[in-house]
Length: 170
Length: 243
Image (cartoon, rainbow over all chains, first blue to last red; front, side):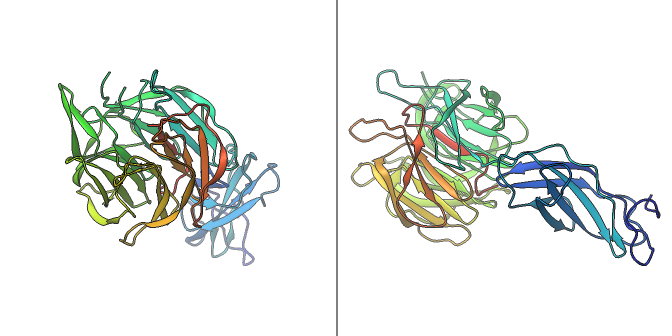
């Protein structure tokens, strides 16, 4: 409950919201998308917004911040390859909630360039190699794994969590 | 030996072998695919029946829901039958460009689709010249195409060209690859587009990785090397402009 023990109390003594729950980060390129569940007890007035803040040491939540009216909130300008956690606060007209529990650790990272299959010579032509490299800085590719079928002239598409390889021939 | 209707997938966050996702409508090769955060759409290609028979060009487009494994569903038709086309996507639209056509000729046509709703391809504009092969990348505002072979002379093409999302129109010259080649892979973040591998008309295979900054025009610069030198490879990323 958002009573006078449930959150930071506004200067006029009225109740702030309970803190958000289920704070779940999805890391991206120098950013994180912070999903959360809004509190059911909004305090004395309706929630007017949320603040998501990021910490790289678990104590100081000033590594990044952004506001939003609903879940998720994207916090940008983070440092890639540095582990962090996030907390979320709910705000109403009378004050700011206590912080949520810290999220699980996440690590922002530059996206990967991912390449699969192909022909490497005209005599023994087809390969099943999947190779990858960070698009964040120059460098050579590394082995990722193998396609289920050796083939070339395939195509690929995907999102942040899954890359699909379609069709092809050998 | 033959064509595959296979769809397999990886999770970019952890290395490992690809896992079965489902099947496309038919075995096919030299299709193009693009995606936003929820849906992947493929189109064109050399198509064969699951019962065998000769390959033929197709205008068929299908789609998959990336988060849930399963077979593809019908999406619509491109404006013509075509193979060896290339594709890119914004968060809203998918673009299919260039190709070999049924008549053995080549096209510079760019079709676009609305990814979230099934339907047929609509004319967007034209590439700077007819071409086939290659691939596409994207920022949130600009689509990039490269690694194609020109239709006129059938030579390699070092041209990089771009379109501006949301405004129908023709492609514009962006700059040149570091080495003239075709049929390599293309991938991008929201700011950087890379071009990998490829083959020259003389049969030279390249392990080159080139890069350009999507927001600016200019020639590609060296990025690094692949672990081998493939052509006919597929490129993707987990942080492109269509997400």
